Amino acid sequence: SNNRLIHMDAMALALDENDHLHTLNLSQATIENEDDDDDDDDDDDENSGENSCTHSSTFLVKLGTTRGLKVLIFDDVELSTETMDELAQSVRINTSLDSLHLNNIGESVSWKSIFESLQDNTTLRTLRIGQNRFDEHDFHTLVGALCLNRSVKSVILSGCDLTDEYLIMVGER
Image (cartoon, rainbow, N blue to C red):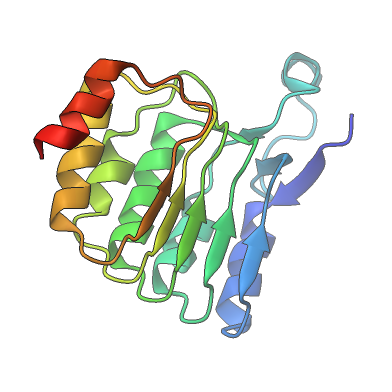
């Protein structure tokens, strides 16, 4: 497997000490905390070959307060709903992020919190969320948030298999 193991505590420290970091690309990474149990062989075998992101609180708190990061890329990383909720809190208060890439992040994730965070973020210009599946409620939340957000200029939804009903939702706003 070509997965990269990224320790979230180290990433949090890097964000804290480097306020002029422009782009952070965590695509196809397996992301864990420094204190994750290395002796749990069953868990390692079960998740080998998958890209996942769990227990990322420290990093995501730092993300919310970082001053220089403009582009954050989580493409092809399986994010949990808990991680998405933590990411949403950071996006809500972040004042530097210009582009957020969440392409192909898993089918069982809830998008509600990340879409709602767009209502409060004033710096994000580009949201790349292609190759994902959205239920009608999540998509309705996205459309509503984009109506309130004046900074987002580009939303990339390629490969999302949107039906006519979803597109009608956009037109009705």
